Each structure stands twice: as C-alpha cells, then as structure tokens.
Amino acid sequence: MESSVNPEAAQAALASIDKSRADIADQLVSPWWYHPALGVLTGGMTMVACSGITWFVAAVVPLVPIIVGSILAVYVVGMILLSRFYYRRVGVLSDAHAAGLRKRRNLAVWMSVGLFLVGNYWAVTEIYNNPWPRAIAVGVVVAAFTVVWGRRFDKAMQAALRESA
Image 1 (cartoon, rainbow, N blue to C red):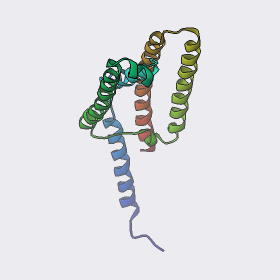
Image 2 (image 1 turned 45 degrees about the vertical axis):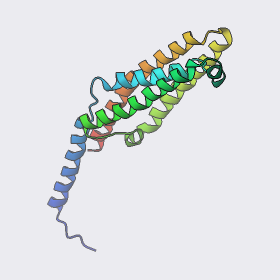
Image 3 (image 1 turned 90 degrees about the vertical axis):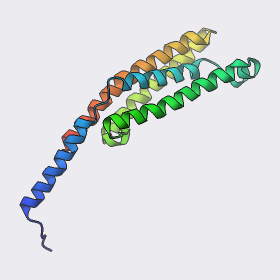
Image 4 (image 1 turned 60 degrees about the vertical axis):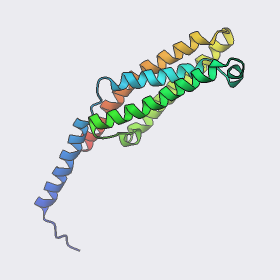
C-alpha cells in the first residue's frame, strides 16, 4: 500500500498541529482572579462542612438550614459563574484528564493533602469541643492550597501541551 500524501504535505500538517497545540497552551492562562475565587469557594464550603453542623442541630436551631442552604447555593452558583467567566475569558475549558501522565501525580497530591487534613481534623476533634477553630483552619488551608496548586497545575498543563507540540 502506498500513500498518496507527499512528505512535504505531511510535514506541513504536523507543523500545523504542533502550532495549534502551542497556541492552545498560550491560551490556557487563567485570569489572576480565577484561583483565589476558586479557593474562597472551596475553602468556604470546606469550612461549613467541617463546622460540625449536623441535621440534628439544623432541626433544633431554625436558622441553621437557611444559613447552610444559602452557603450551598452561593457555592453552586459561584462555581457555575466561575466556570462560565473562565470559559469566556480563555475560550477553552481544561480538566485534569488533559494533563496526561501528570494526572496521577496531581491526584496523588490532592489525595495526600485531603487525607492529611481529614486526619488532623478528626485528631483535633477529639481534643477540643469547639468545631469552629478547626473548621476555619481547614477552610483556610484548603483555600490556600487551591490557589497554590491550581496555579502549578495550570503551568503543568501548559508544559504538557508544549511538550507534545
């Protein structure tokens, strides 16, 4: 079987693909506000989740379901708006699967930090009765980690696209 494509046309097609990947890598620059906003949303939601508010407390204190429901609504609406603003600004939505082999490392880091936080959260629960100091601490750590690791992940995504280009 012989190919009807000449070598120069094939090289030009490959060069065009490489240029497209490099262009996408240049386009995948998150706005400066993206990761801090994502950190506030995830840290805030984590703080509420770690606060010790249970449905039993919600049944006894009438305002708790309204407060928790409002925070959950702010989180969901915030995440939807954040992804829409990001898509309008960048023009491409990226996900963790696009990072190729870096996906495993990214998942391992996230899981390690998550397990560390959960372990410390439950250890502190046994020592102190007041849930808010630990909930605030975990929320702040999650927010800071989201900002720092999110920016690192963006750079890793860009590098992966450039390497394959």
